[in-house]
Image (cartoon, rainbow over all chains, first blue to last red):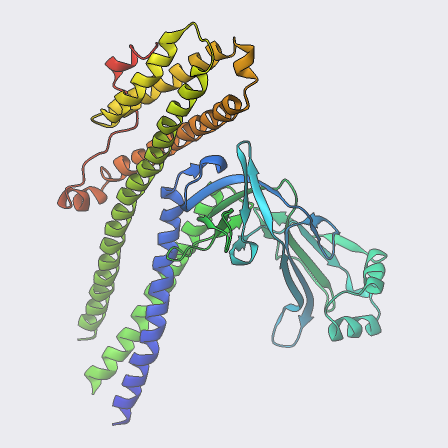
Length: 266
Length: 185
């Protein structure tokens, strides 16, 4: 009786996981093909529906990145502190902030608005800095832990401390290195004016207006902006798909074998 | 017995993956085919808009004394030619002729300072040029979509599903080679 209950729970639990994994893997493959099968349009002649564009970023006004003080239309800021215990070591996030404003994409034929809050951003880190721990007093570290957003005073103190660049290779922050507990890592991703971007999304009319805008479609939800090229994005999706497929096969097969063995053994 | 269980699980997974792959191929082919229909509709809209602008241009120009009357006659004729086009190659050929004719007409009209200063004429000239540029962009886009589709339906394993669905290669938006030689007006 107990065995049956366990089997039913296992089947139910893993079914949800299988469906989720299969759907995610299928979606990755689908988006990869969607990118591959959609030719790039010129902005002036882009038609209503799914479009792929290549252009540069421009806006009427800009945001400022919290750390590097660059003008941008979108930024993602991550501040992490290095920790080490008897069992593990790694980076713990102290602050994570994402911001964007309305902006346009332009090419040599025209410009088009992007609905910034409906777009997913696939942007590589541009700034990765390491603020060495010994430069902070214990009191300062406690202050930072209490309030994860860097205050102007702390910003001043960071500027006077020893700051090292962390290598960014192929759009990824180098994770290797020997860090001390309390070391701070600051990573910024942003889209600055005239940044070359790749866009895929649905071209439609802005709410209550005739103006065209790139947004998430009613049926086709794929909508993202990236500073990588189409080839790089395809490579990324390919890799993610293969990894997900392997994980899906393993996670599907092992519990299934276990459940069937339980059923057979009675 | 245990080996049979593992083999069963393996076959089950292969079957599920296979079913998903077939669904994906089918959906992918349907999407590509619909992309062509959509891309063509987007060209047709612009072609229609351009041929609708031509009578307005002719009316504006008629108010002035133009010595090269044949230009106006050609503009009227090309519009009716478009309406009688049979297939995509015909439309492409007439489109190429129209491009050349419009360029030639604007060069002729430029010689008349009064016409050049006419606000209506300038507006029409700008509008027609904009539509021409958009047609050229969308033509390129259409040919890209058709090339992707034609390549895909010939690739393995897409060709197996494409054949069973009776999907045939589509024509690019280009004039026939023999017709191209006669495009210049």
